[in-house]
Each structure stands twice: as C-alpha cells, then as structure tokens.
Amino acid sequence: MRYAFCVLVLAVCAASSAQAAERPNFVFFLVDDLGWADLGCYGSTFHETPNIDKLAGGGMRFTQGYAACPVCSPTRASIMTGRHPVRVDITDWIPGARNNKGRFKHVNDRDDLALEETTIAETLRENNYQTFFAGKWHLGNEGNWPTEQGFDINIGGHHKGSPPGGYYSPWNNPVLKSKGDGEYLTERLTEESIHFLETRDQAKPFLLYLAYYNVHTPIQPYKKRVDHYQEKAKQFEGKTPFQAEGAARSRMRQDNPEYASMVAAVDDSVGAILDALDRLSLADDTVVIFFSDNGGLCTVGGMGPTCNLPLRSGKGWLYEGGVREPMIIRAPGVTKPGSVCDTPVVSMDFFPTMLALADLPAQPQLHVDGESLVPLLEGESPTEQRTFYWHYPHYHGSKWTPGASIRDGDWKLIEFYEDDRVELFNLKQDPGEHHDLSTSNPEKTTQLRQKLKAWQTKLKAKMPEEVAGFKKD
Image (cartoon, rainbow, N blue to C red; front, top):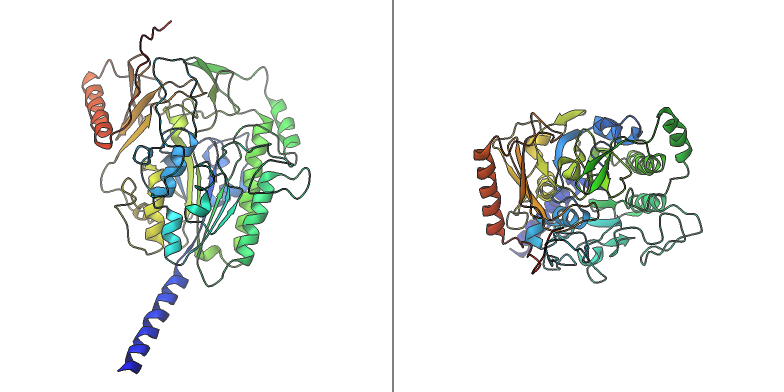
C-alpha cells in the first residue's frame, strides 16, 4: 500500500511539474506617459518604432485599450491587482499635488499599494513562476517595493515616479547603482532584463515586468537617436501649433526631437529583448504585452512634448488622449499575427488574462474589475457590452480640475466638478470629442450621470469636499 501511495504521489508531482513547464512565460512592457499616437503602428509619422511595430505585426493590436486613470500610480495599481483604483484607494499619482488653490480640498488617498492586496506577481509566484521587476514602481516607499509585492528581483523600482537624477548616470536611484558616468538608464534596465533571461531558473516559467521610466519628464534626449530627429524636424515650417484646453495648451503636432529620441530608446530596448527571446529559444513560449500607464503628455500650461491627435488632450485629462493607450499582446498559438481588436478593454483586464493564458483558475474575488481577454485574443466577438468608469477627483499639473467620466457603449460623459459642467460625446461618430451633445441629448446625459453616480456610491468613491467660503474669480 505504501509503495502504491508513493507511486501515486510521484505521478502527481510529475504531472504538476510537466504542467508548470508548459505554462507560458510573460514579458510585460509598461511605458511611462507614452501616447496612443506615439507609435508607427498607431499612425505616427514623426516617431519611428520598427521593433514595436514588428511586435504588433506578430500579435494583436488594440485600438481602444484604456488605462484605469489618466495618471500613473492608479493605473499601475490596477494592473497589479485587477482592481479599479477606487477600490485600492490610489486615485492620484503618489503622493499627488497638495497645494492647489481651487474650489475643492485635496482628496486624501493612499500613498502606497497596501500589502494586503494580492498582485499578479504574487499569484504567479505561488504557481511556481520566477518573477523579475525592472524600472519604475511608484507604488509606495521602502517596505512597499516590488520585492514586498511578489517579485523575486527588483532592479530600479522604488518610490519615485520621475527618475531621480535624470536618465544619465550618475543618477540617484536607491536600488540601481550606475556602472559609470554617462550610462543611459533605459539601456541599463534592458541589460539587466536580458541578464535575467540568460541566468533565470530554467525549471520555472517566468514573469519579466519591465516598467520603463521613459518617456516621462525630464525630457532628456537619447543621444544615439536625437540627431536623426533634429534633422527630421527641419521638414516643419513655423512654430509648433497649439490649442487651448481650459487653462492649459495642447500640442497639436508631433515634432519634438528630444521626445522622439526617448520613444526610440524604448523601441531599441523592446527590440533587444525580443531578440534575446529569439536567441534563447523562448519566443514561442512567451506572451509579450505592451502598454502605457496613461496618455502622452500633451496638455500643460505651456504645451506638452507630444501630441495625441486625433484624440483630444493628454495625460491628466479624462478626454480620450489621457486614458486611451497603445496596447499590444502577442500570445503564440493564441493571437493571429497582425490582428486588430477594436473592442474597448481596460488595464484591470491584464490580471485575469494572464491567469487564463497560464491555464490557472480565475480569481474573480481578486481581479473583480477585470475580464479575461483570451476570447478576444482568439478572435471572438464580445458577448456583451461593458461600461467603464474613471474617477479622478484631484487637481493635476496639466491644469485638469476634479472630475469623473463614464463610457457606456459609444457614449462617453465627463463631469467637471470645478464649474459644475458636463460634456457628452458619441465616440463612434466623434472620437476626437469635439462635439458636446449634453444639451441636445439631455436624456442620455441624465442617464449616464445617474449611472456614474450609482457606481461611485457602490464603490464608496471619495468625492471632493468644497473649501469653506471659496469664491471663484
């Protein structure tokens, strides 16, 4: 009997090991502040991104992939947890702006991702994955860094959002020491990522999560590529056009050589890592995901470094330019090369999607706001229409003032709390959000406002509190 039991145990263990070996690896590229229109495969003619374009050609490109928030930390938390930023109580970049002089008080949210939250890294590690993180974390101080949230290795991830000391060494990163003066941060993160691929535990599948600091400010040119774009920019005549957006200005043309060179640095990095996957015979067993944490920085007081046209505005704003992202998934054996998906999806969807691709059970009590994208990746049509919500009750340096929005089918409504204003758009007919239909369609306006309010109430979203005695100029 004991012999039979041992044989059974060995058989179960062997089957479990075989299943683990067959599970796909994951490489997740997350770019900081990359705009929806910043890539060649999304229509850019000034920026050149051949490696990312090739990735899109080998997988599925999403035209309506949304970030959960128009700024970084909330979206990063949503990817990690599969939960809406309101649920994890991170609704602004950490720590957020706190010296605003508008109508409302600062809405206090968390300054870290709670350790009680379960991340996709923790879940994969519990299922025998080796987990590696490199780049920007921005989800809390020491004690809440990647190694406390499910990653075996952390290269460069800490509490800051913008790279301290800039992109060239000597930088001031507490978990990434430079090797010499003039070293470029993105190149170093890429080298570390490739080193992980070369030295990983080959008995385990892996998650490699590379969260670039590019293309976040400070806008510092990538010296290997900037000359090309400075020459290319000579095609333009006159000053860069801009358009007023509230108290800010939106850039209306992609023509910034420094910014373009930073995009090129990301493209070079993606190419190097994809080449490493090929060289190490890992490409056929690795799912590659590419995404941005919020819209490109288009709209600020003076004018941002990129342009998100045909989408309106950019980072910090709830117009499409602030929340719609470039999104690509290449899943060998699942995605059809060169396929395009026009179905709206959101950053909370990555968690359940990765579980499904790894043949692990869904955990809807965790990723409560996400849905598996595997049916879409396989080319199926969506079975039902989803509603998406954004809650951004904060002031932002882009001159955004507190508000919220909802997308229900083709309809999108934005509430601006500062001046008690609402705008309604039909995105199918007007993706650039030029024609406000709130007055001409009061029924749809009322319906969506009520639906948004009901969602905020259900999730106990923190609403801005008016400053006592505030008087608008």
